[in-house]
Length: 289
Image 1: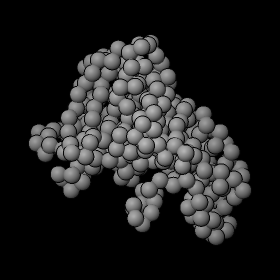
Image 2: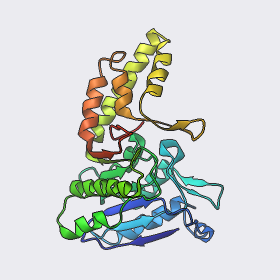
Image 3: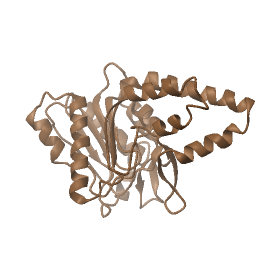
C-alpha cells in the first residue's frame, strides 16, 4: 500500500483506488497509526491534503476491491480481509475537515474500484467534494486510465470539476475498449450538491412503500421480484451477494405499485447524475441502492 500526493494545477482531487493484485498491504502501516487501520491511514492521508491548501491529493489503496455499501473498500489481505467501511471513511474526513456543501475541501472524490457508486457512498462523502466518480459494476483489472484524464487537465488547467469528471469517465471507457473489457463496465459522475433533493425523494418513496405494505403484506413479495428484475450488480450464488441494485431500473419497475413518488425520485436521480458511461451489456442510471 502506498499513499502519495501530487500537485495538479491547484485542482482538489482525492482518489481511493484498488491497486494491482500483486500489491499487498504492508502490515507495518497498521502500527503507530492513530485510530488503527485502515481508518487511521485515510485520516493521515486526508490530513496531508489539509496542509496543502489548494493542492490535489492522490492516493492509491492497493490489494483490495470495492464491495458496495455493505462490503466497503480496500480489503486487507494481510489482516483477515479487513475493509474500509463507509463509516470509517466519513470519520476520517470529519477528523480533518468540517463538511460544507458550499465550500467542500475537494472538487472530486473518486473510487477507482468496484461497486462504490451507491447512494450510501455518495452520502458518506457529501460535504467533502462537489462531485463523486465511481462505478456501480465490478471494475475490470485495467481500471481508470492514468494518462488520458491528466492530459485533459494539463491541456486546460481551468477545467471545471464536472468536465474533469467527464474526462475520467470517457477515458475509462476508452481504456476498457482497448482491453476488450467494456461489456459490463460502468462509471458515473455524481453531483453531491443534488443529494438533499434525492435523499428526500428516496425517503418519501420508502414511506410510500411502507404504507402500501401495511395495507397489503403481499407487497413485500412484489418488492423482491422487482428488485430481482432490476439491473443488479454481483448478486449471484457464484459471485456472492452485494445486494446492490440500480436505483433507476428498480424504481421504474415500481411505478405502478408506488405511483406517488416514483417519478419524483427518478427526476431527482437525473438531476444528481451529471454524466455516466457504460458498456453494451449494461444500462445503469448512475447510482445503486
